[in-house]
Amino acid sequence: MFKKGTKAYSIIHKTCPHCQEGQFFVDNNPYNLSKAGDLLDHCPVCHRKYTPEPGFYYGGMYVAYALAVALFVTIYVATQVLYAEAPLWLLATLSLTGLFTLGPWMYALSKIIWANLFFSYKGVQLTAEELEKQVKRG
Ligand SMILES: [Zn+2]
Image (cartoon, rainbow, N blue to C red; front, side, top):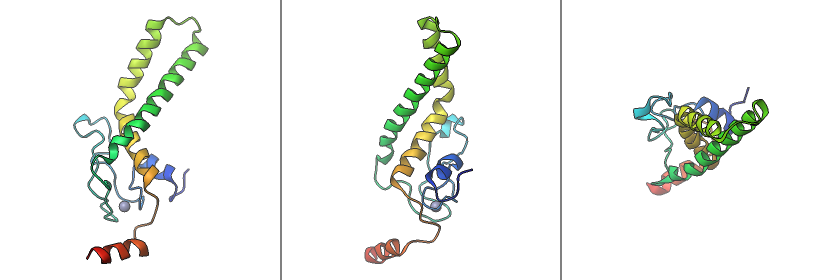
């Protein structure tokens, strides 16, 4: 559906935002809670780092917040359409159930979306600019 080279491809297939071939997460199943949202240090295919600086993925909280708001709005609108006189306790129960059910998935999704906001597709081979940087570093 989404072509390789688009950010949506990397997000949907949970692949490296740089080359879109290597795995991004330690475990692609976000419901394996002991490893939920854990990233590999670098891409196993193109060997580019996933974390440019310490604490880089704290910014993913903004994405997670936006996803949670989108979930609450969806639940609210769906409830209003199906049962306009829904009491507050029902809305709260549905919202919390949705959040706990989709939480691990949204947590992982927020990290790959955050990474894709900052990294762009470059292909497996290092670009001329990246090679130049490596030479300068020695
Ligand atoms: Zn890669």
